Image (cartoon, rainbow, N blue to C red; front, side, top):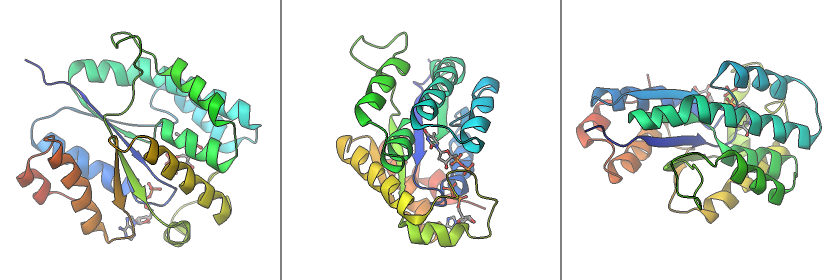
Amino acid sequence: MIKPGIFISFEGIDGAGKSTHIEALAAAFRAQGRAVTLTREPGGTPLAEKLRAMVLNDPMDALTEALLIFAARRDHLVQVIEPALARGDVVLCDRFTDATFAYQGGGRGFDLGMLSVLEQWVQSVQGLPADMIRQPDMTVWFDLAPEIAAQRLSGARVPDKFEAQPVEFFRRVAQGYAQRAAQSPQRFARIDAARDRHQVWQQITSAMVRRGWLAIMVAANGGPK
Ligand SMILES: Nc1ncnc2c1ncn2[C@@H]1O[C@H](COP(=O)(O)OP(=O)(O)O)[C@@H](O)[C@H]1O
Ligand SMILES: Cc1cn([C@H]2C[C@H](O)[C@@H](COP(=O)(O)OP(=O)(O)O)O2)c(=O)[nH]c1=O
């Protein structure tokens, strides 16, 4: 019998430490025999990657941006995430809809009610009860003060359209995440991302072990390189 798929998203402001830990978590799941689909948003399909390049590089008004992001999400869900979950994969997704609420809603001040309507439309998929939409089973939220994230990113990479925003923007993004976490406390696993890499890794794997998704031994042996 195939195991049910698990959908885990990773969220937090730019520089919070997501990329550092996702690969290591994929390796931990593989070490205990699970197939892993490692993917990201915006992106994850050829079409969605084209939309990502536009969203991250071209100036545009907030509604255009939200529509492109949700169009990319729909393609990604239908082409990649749903088939992977149906196969029983562990899907590790670097950002999902909480990022839209945080960046377009919190950061850019776009209407949250409209984002909720788009969320309902885009995440309605076949095979779920009519009153349910596809949501991550768990969202690992790297919570970090914007000042620390900016310090970590300074000189680390060429900033994209969002990374080039001032610290006040990221303060609003962080508030957007906190608001989403308060609305779905069961789904969100908050990580104190100000700790060192080892302690961050321990917090992440503890959340997986608590859900019965990762064996303690596998978690103890892994970690970011
Ligand atoms: N716990 C940590 N302590 C200090 N620096 C970290 C930690 N985790 C990641 N970093 C560094 O911070 C920067 C941003 O991390 P990254 O994983 O790329 O963040 P994100 O993917 O969330 O934008 C990188 O240079 C990374 O090496
Ligand atoms: C998924 C998503 C990302 N974003 C932004 C956040 C990030 O600044 C950017 C790309 O995310 P990310 O892949 O984390 O960037 P990087 O590969 O540089 O670490 O897109 C939104 O504004 N809205 C969204 O819905």
